[in-house]
Length: 461
Image: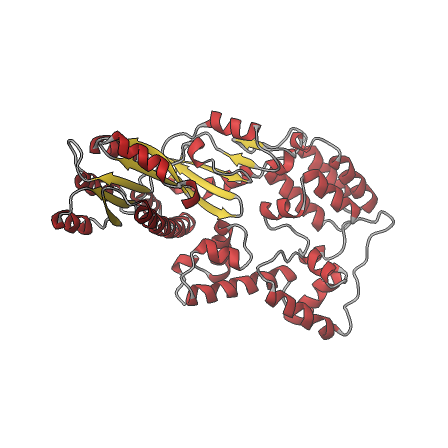
């Protein structure tokens, strides 16, 4: 929701603006009102503001002077001027200040709504561009470059507070965040030069419905460590997957029984019956006393790599790639552990299947399906189910025909599609990330760099 500041020395005009415009329908929310230019400037410095509507004639600092100050403070702020004076000099000055529009009094509501729609489009494009550049810098930039980028966005401090949310909505204002960026479906990243409102976060989680979480490290982070801080905040936001309920997490501390769980896994790694029993036991335990989201992720990948688990483990095809996948495929950690246990036959160690014969007959339809559906969930398990084949068979088929593991093939396919979009469209990185099947565009940036050698923002076709 974009934030609007209203400034006019006439209280009746402010009341009219507040009631006559369908703010919510336009994707806008009134952040504050002011009756002088100085008051408006003070509010704009304290509040995250995307659009400012100001009268030209106000006591003290007039509307044009206010626009000048706002433009210096944040060049991306969308400015709309109201005036009862049909004077070309005002309009000329407004053009010089790159004001979006000039609306005469008495206010024509239709004209103002048209200007506000244009402001929303421009602000969203600017936010997307800011997000692309900022996240690209966080992944690959020098600390002084990152600091400068934050300063341009209005965060002038020695460090920055970072928070993230998954599955909870419209919390930027309650948290008192100064910047927010959408990373994927129902996933957001927040920045502020001041501490976030933890009490507000606790209230949000207390009344949250369904699955969701907020990651909120208590201390600010220096710009040289910001990449890791963002990754940690995102990991904390997924702690709900371990607890099985909405969770506010400020640190990732392994549970007191984590070492014991890993030791027992090591002991059971060669014995299907023991491994199955361990997983079923853990599935019925309070997982939050044993794991955090990071240790749970490592534990499940070690299960997939166990000889007793069998299947395509030797090629890493059942390995999990991120917290997003955990939450997308399973309700919570207990359900995932139960699912892993169900895949194990305790009778004997599974033997590798022979290489499939007649591979090309199955390979082409699978290849065609992947080419046509690369933006969807393409887990090996779901592809095998779609074609009514064994997952190990599909894994060997892809490897035999391409020389790549299934996961490597799908990743390469998505990265190549992303390259095409970078060459041929003006889509934001968030839009490209979603279009090619990455549900988290910070993860997309990291994966793109790993595969191509540079981040998407530095990619030159």
